[in-house]
Image (cartoon, rainbow, N blue to C red; front, side):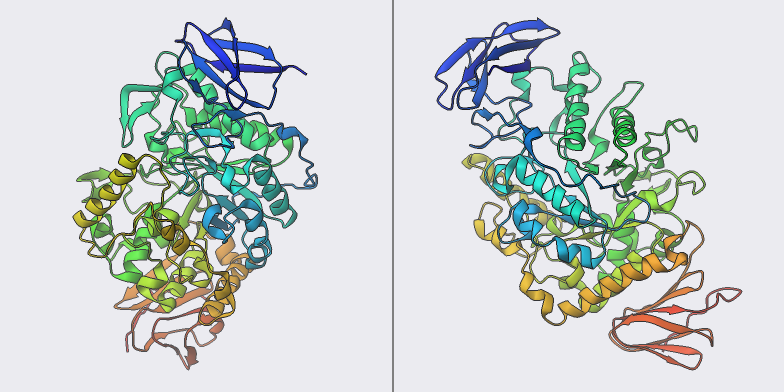
Length: 591
C-alpha cells in the first residue's frame, strides 16, 4: 500500500525521499507548489528521511516518531489505530481546577507513561483535576527536562512513544483527570535541530535568550505558523489532550496584526466547541500583562484570549515569606506589602511598578471585572523554581515541613488557580535537579560550565550536580515509599484536606480579587476571605492571634488551639478557622 510523504523545503532545488533504516532506497520527490514536495511510495520497513540537494538524510520536521533518536531516520506511525475508551469524557474547565505538574522521566522509577499510569490513583485521591506533563516532544538522549526538544511532533521514545502517551491520557480520563502538555514553540534545542536546513523557520529580525527567534512574521512565515497550529491540532485531536502550556511566550516575537497566540487560542476554542471537550491554552509569560488572557475583542487592550497564564509573582512573594531568601529577583518581594498585595488584590506585584531586578517599571494592572483571578495559575513550587536552584532543593528542604504546610494553605485558599509540583504534596525528600543526556562532548561541557558560573554569580556556594551524570536523574526520581512515613504522610493528608475544603467553602471556591484581607505582624499572619480565617505562625516559638468568640477550627497543621478570644499557634503552625467577619481593621498581636 502506497504511503504519501510530504515535506516543506522552499529553498531546496531537489528533495529525495530516503527509505529504509539503512537508507537503501532513494527516490526523487515532486515539487507541488508553495515550497512543498510530495511522493507516493511503498513504505518498506517504515523508516524514512529526506535529503535536500544531495545532502545527508535528515529526519522529517513533522516526524511522529524517532525510535532511534533525534538524528536518525523517522518512523511512520498510525496514531488512528489506538482504541480509546474515553468517549464519555467531558473535560475540565480551568475555573475551579487544581493542577499537578509532573515530569514523566522522574515521576516513577520506570520513567515512562506506563509507570505514571500506576500512580494515577494517588493523584485522583489527592483531589487534583489536571495533570500538566512537562514536554514530551523528542529530545537528545534518554533523560532531560524536555525544553531542548527538536522533533516537536514526535513523542519521546524513552517515555513510551506515541502510543504510550495515548495510553496515559486515556487512563487519566478514566480517573477523572484532564491532561495538559507543556509545549515549547519559542526555540528548539541545539542538538538535533534540523529545521533551519529545511526552510526559514528562524529569523535574525528578532533575538531570544536562545539565539535567533522563530520566524512568525517574516517572509515564509505563513508555513512556519502552520507548523505550530498543526502541532496544536495534533495534540488535541490525535492524543485527546485537554490543554497546552505554552512555554515563555514573551519570546514568541510576532509583529503581525493577529499574533500567533491569538491564532492558537482561537484554534483551541474551535476544537473545543467541535468536540464538546474544553481545550485550555495557558501561557508562561514574564510580561505581567493581563492582555494575554483578556478575551479577544474585550477591554480595548488587544486581548490574546488564552485561557490562563502563569503568575510567578505569587510564588516569589510566598517563597520570600516562607524562607527569608531575598537575593536576585526575590529582592523586590521582601517588601512588606508584597504578600498582602498578591494574596489580596492582584497576581502581579509588579503591575506598572518599578522592578529593581529589571531596572525599570514592569507589568500592567489587572481589572478584576474583565480578568478574574482563576485565569492566573500560581504555585508554591514548579520545575523552574526547584530545578533552577543550585542543588534542586525543594521548599520543605529549605523552610521545613511546617512552613511548607503554611505555604500550601496560603496557595490553596488563594483566589487563583493553584498548581502543585510532583512530590510537593508529601514533602518529597528527593531533590529535583537539572539533567541532560547530550552525546556531543563540547555541548555537555558547556552546559556544566554554564551552570557552575551562573550559580557562582548568584552567590550559591553549594556544589552544582553534574547535569550529564545519570546519578543526577536517579537522585531526582520520586521515592514513593515515603508516602506512609512521617512527616510525609501528615503533609499529604494536609494537602488532601486543603483541596477538599477549597471546593467546599464558597469563600475560597468563589473568591474574587480585591475581596480578601491580609495582615502581618512579625511572624504572625492572618488572611481573611469572608468567614474563612487563615492564621499562621512562621516563627520557631508559639504565637497568639485574636479571633471572634464564635470561631471554629476547620483544620490545622502543627499546634492550633482556641483559648477564649485567641488562637494559640505552635511553631511553624497554621490553622483554618471559620468565624463571622468583624468590622474595622484586622487586629494582629504577638506573643
